[in-house]
Image 1 (tube, rainbow, N blue to C red):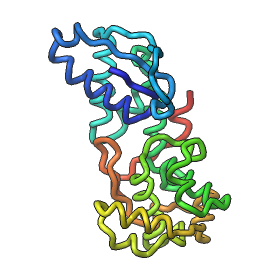
Image 2: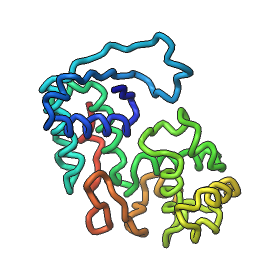
Image 3: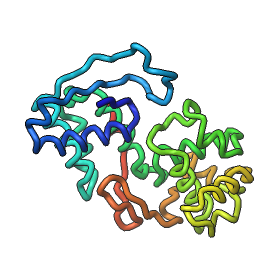
Amino acid sequence: MWFDIQPDAQLKLVWLLDYFRSYPETVAKLRFRLVDLAMIELHGFGKWRPPAVDVTEKELEVAAAAWRAYRAPTPEACFDLLGKDLSALPLLKPVLVDLLEELPSSSTGLGASEMRMLELIGRGYSLTNALFHLYQLRQTRIFGQWEYGYLLDGLAFGPKPAVTGLDEELRTLHRENLRGRHGAYLRSELSLTEFGKAVLAHKADFSQHNPIDRWWGGTHLTNDNLWRWNPALIAP
């Protein structure tokens, strides 16, 4: 089993290890390789073979605790995990931090990826290609292209939008219509509204003016159930 630094890969790792914990004979045969870069960056495996690690009870315990915490109806257990010894799965803690930063901010009501999009748009990156595809520019690693699009929809189409210029057809296109959505995103030319500039400057709270309805692990985030993060809680 190969698992890289991407959050979805680490979540799959803890899910699988938690599952296999009930099958000790299978666990005895398992080996996994931790890859310290995104595997999408590889042009070929060739003879490259990171060290293979046995799966022991320590890895199983950490995985079970992480999977249980992520599936919980509140994110509190994930915050608690940051103070635990997670060294058996050395790529897990940075991923937990990235995930927790996607909770609504205590000052803006937006997660890290949403705020990063506002930052880029505010700097003049008006086309969605930069927001969705330039990985180094995006900085955050949590979401894929279409998920970034859904976040952008929320920033642009709420009662008090932070972003303007997103193609209006996206209001009515089904999420399954990927071809149509792709074309609409390419036609868009984005800029910040005055409200968006205030949110970016941490002078306004997006969630006080717009509906919040999304899932973070097992937590259903709504305006009435808005779990927020504070940078002090996730400091190293």
